[in-house]
Image (cartoon, rainbow, N blue to C red; front, side, top):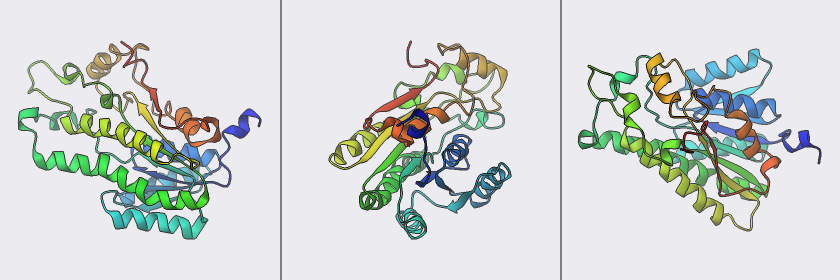
Length: 272
């Protein structure tokens, strides 16, 4: 097989959850550009319709869908639609997540210390970031088994590997702010789920891997960018398109001998 053929997804069907997010929309575009029939799914219907309209302007046909990953019936209905339309599911990208942002207008919202972190927020974070991923994998498994193959890609985070450096979120003269505990814990759980499923699907041609992005620039203030960048080997935050190559690698035959792994694209954050 020639190198370009390894990355060709023509004739394959894919779902991207969290497709209205910063990285989710990039993942949907990448898979569509590689030839896949992509369903961009998100709980925010209007937002994901806007994403697919933008992609259409670029000549890409991506179908929008509303899905609540915390609802078994919602996720199962989405997979059933794919089966009726395409008869198969080849790629599932689990990108849906509650990720507390520290870009413009959001940073001041995260002032709950560990001691005061609300149980409601803990439960909600686990429901979306971990249970939602479990439900999506569970719904996709049967269709992938019937098709004889599949690639599941679970989006993790560097904070699933190492603890957050809370110092980079602080500002002199302002109330302390924190990357919440539930984000790290749920993302660590993503790796456990990934390895469990990879082993569970032994003997099938269903592969399950994780992709761990580092911090992606999205209108962060200059002080945060400097603080974050100083912690990376490459000395900067990622661009939003810098996870796409890794995503396509994991989705395609280029990674056909890879399962149960975690592909880290973090600019060297976890190297120090």
